[in-house]
Length: 392
Image (cartoon, rainbow, N blue to C red):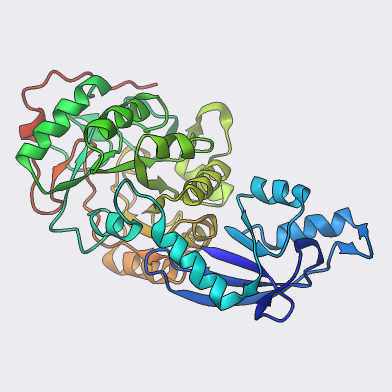
């Protein structure tokens, strides 16, 4: 995440926002809590001799709009409002920049995660951490029946044989999920994460939030994780936090509208999917969630665009990136999946901006067990009457 400091000398914060001639930009890795200097940005101050220049004011906002935090001696109410609308947290303080950075890192480490520290949550999550991948389990609850976009590579299916996203044995009702979690923990005591990843989009209906509300009450120590395409994510961060969600995965396959048109055939309500995704990521990151971005690598379509995606979602607040090879199906059935060399090349490009996760197993929407070690979904769901998918 990026922090901006109102400082004219690059060492000490001693300026009001409207009078700052420069902003020092630093970047903090939210996983390791290490930081680095990025750059010094020049600013044409909007407030001089008691006069306020509106054009320069908007330019000052724009200069730091990619940052998650501004630290200045004082910030006026109008500037606070405008920065808040851009997703920038405002802190009023003065002092040496290195000391303020150290204090902010201490704050990050103290963020509440339902009894866990942020680092512990990530380390215990097999879909966020390589440390947990072969030792910790996860349960996906297939409660989301419908989707609000159509990706050209997506083919949702109801069966017990395919091992890929968008597939489950059926749909659970939210009211059934507490019992299912209890059964899953008996089958696999190593489960640390209860996630919802489909088979439709988790925010296209209210089922996922209803589920987390009930599950979090019964199992407060289990990590709650949501996967979404992000279309309905803006405005949901506080509600998701309130029902226990501390980690979220957003699938972002393009940050260029022309490329996106080649990947997504329709979006419900003709909403701006890219804008929704970036706004939702920013809101979730500002709330305190750990945000991972999934990107499906599609040769000939977005393979030259992966670094741009990583750069954009990093600026919005994502801390981890998972590049997934295309599974040729639906409209993309004739596209060859990327080679190992292509995947590694994309990871190198994206790795300039975000930590790369390399252990994804293309999990089903009703997966249960330790990824790569055990799959207990058939045993968990074989005697249950499950509902069928919605195609809305």
